[in-house]
Image 1: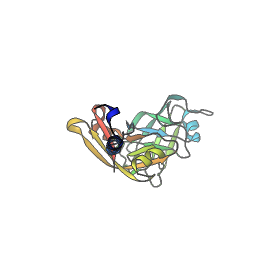
Image 2 (image 1 turned 60 degrees about the vertical axis):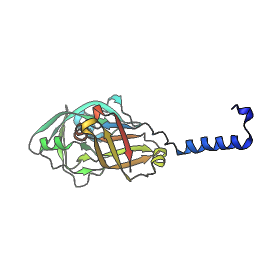
Image 3 (image 1 turned 135 degrees about the horizontal axis):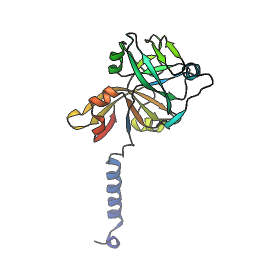
Image 4 (image 1 turned 45 degrees about the horizontal axis):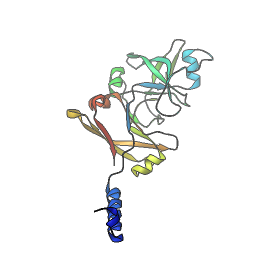
Length: 219
């Protein structure tokens, strides 16, 4: 039957079927990046100078996915209470108002630190450590954490997922026999962030993230 032979009611019925089919179809998922956040350090301006010399600032090595964040050329040694150490831990920029060391549980065991899980920036009452750079050392009284798994997203992504800043989501990683669900990711939503999950090296290795075929966020 040609379109010319269709009456008005038939045409309207076809249009309704198309509209209903489109509305029932699942919407396309946004591009989701899941990144392994390896051990790293955030420093204050003061601590940068104490570790690397007067007048020194961080030297950008490469930009990171989130706007304005970068990996610096500078690295420091992290020394724990048992005098065990991690050499060449990368500094990330830009500088912050308080220095913070982010490690995985495996790193903390090596250093002899009882590591709390905290949101980045929430360092009150956390353990400290010593930082050693080429020009000096800094003793941190607090600031060593395991950053809790979280997802950065733009406010438009948050609306799409039906969540808001501070909510919790789950991440499913499809990777064969190592497929895993990580629960309770902290939602960090604002008008500048891009959609990206951060998990640490222990979590990424356990789920075999490097060989994952698919990842998905859900409530």
